[in-house]
Length: 278
Image (cartoon, rainbow, N blue to C red; front, side):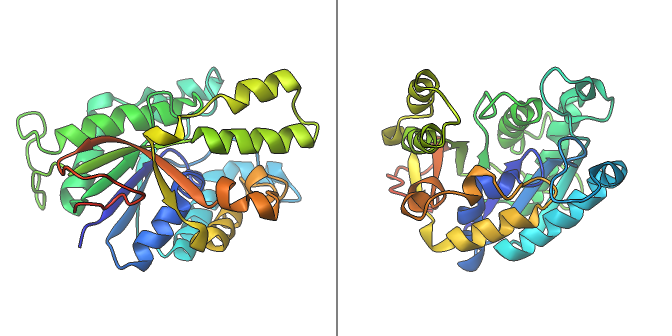
């Protein structure tokens, strides 16, 4: 049965970008794997009385949260790629020798190549070239993910290791934010007085036009997705936008997940199904 490998930057990204697809894929009995590039050791700490006491062991805490989220989504296979969180662009943490932003490119690609060759998914998801919003680790997920996608079949560049088989994933997608979702979220912010009219116009016209995307209906999995988000306790505050979406907007903002098809070896219209034609 065709399987899915979903490559993400930090613990919690997998739920935000693809939680519904992951839950639905796993529930259908398809092999499902999440690969997380970094340990999530940077960023703010929410929902703890003493955040400063958590920070020295933040990577450990977020690994525990990651395991809880995977259990809620029903995903049995998860791998950390082994890099430190790089923090936001321009931060001192960008220069930490162990962070993903500073990773040796060939080494990082090789790590992911080995995972792809062993798991042999039929569908793989990564991020767009900007990483969605310019975070260095998200940009690296695009760079490393795209290179590993092609390199998994390249025996000259990456010779086979024990237990590996050359593998070209039949379908590759970028996670994307559809323009309709950007507009709905901007409407929420405008009504709440969080942005100006000018900012609304900018936000409402951002994102990828819906007609270019594979829009996956995951409304059945909204509650599961929100529960998995809350499992990332240290990262997701209770007033975070996905947790406070009005009932009449939940289907569009939370229940719709979008992907841009970059490569397919099967000639078929996706029509809301990443596995179409496989």
